[in-house]
Image (tube, rainbow, N blue to C red; front, side, top):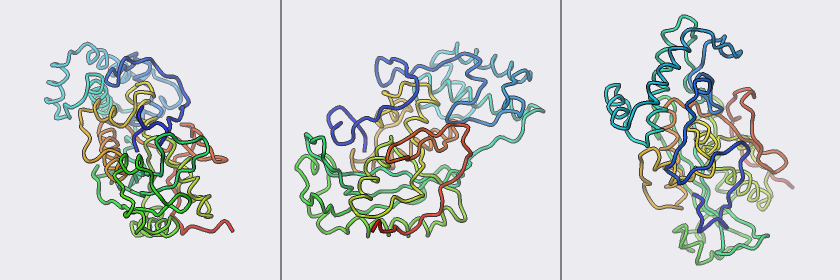
Length: 348
């Protein structure tokens, strides 16, 4: 579910660690253009550098060529950027700074491939990325102790090799603590009272989710990771729901990709400018579907992820759950996929 000023009480903004820069609006994207920052890998990952660069040595001549290309791209106006993208058969959608990032990544890949010092670029580590965006019970003015219950469990599966959405899952969930939805919640999410009244409780739905993931052979045959729009889906909604339903928090959901962090790091934008609508707009896309429908939100988040992968970003796990709170996963942490999903175990 997208966070905005009107429904911040439903899914509050979670302060992210790391420096931010001041932007005048969601489309005022500011990229750092210094040669050094272009030579080094972003936190979210780009094409793999030569081994000497991995140890901080940028003396290889290829990096001078990359820096010169970056400088030329920085001096291009919008018409020149679009013309160059057309010439190279790259996507022409997005604000100027997104186009610059796209061109820089293209030339960086080409130069590194041509360099004798370059190893094979590492493309997608995960075979699949599974996007999750819950909808939960809410009030127009949530008290501080309000307990959000998941009422929609959607998942959208991205094949990172074909860069396509290949499948999706959706199930509504019957809340038990507060079974009656507020008018505000119904209006916000589009989920009617009868839709949750006729739904299964969370433990039943969660077993179906696990079975769906197991059918895809995720964590066994294929490497995968979960991806969310912010920290709250896992650290707040899923964590709280598991406690309410008296089941253990699933191991496969303890680490995830926070696309807001990945987007901010890759395109060098302030973290407070990474709302779903803003990311779509900056990439030259429009929202498709109904906002705050969990499945539609998940599909649009997946579209952003695919766009980022096409632009050269290597999406990787950047957050984890520790002691019930979200924590950042350092870039130096070993890259690994989520474990095979298992049926939920009782806390009793």
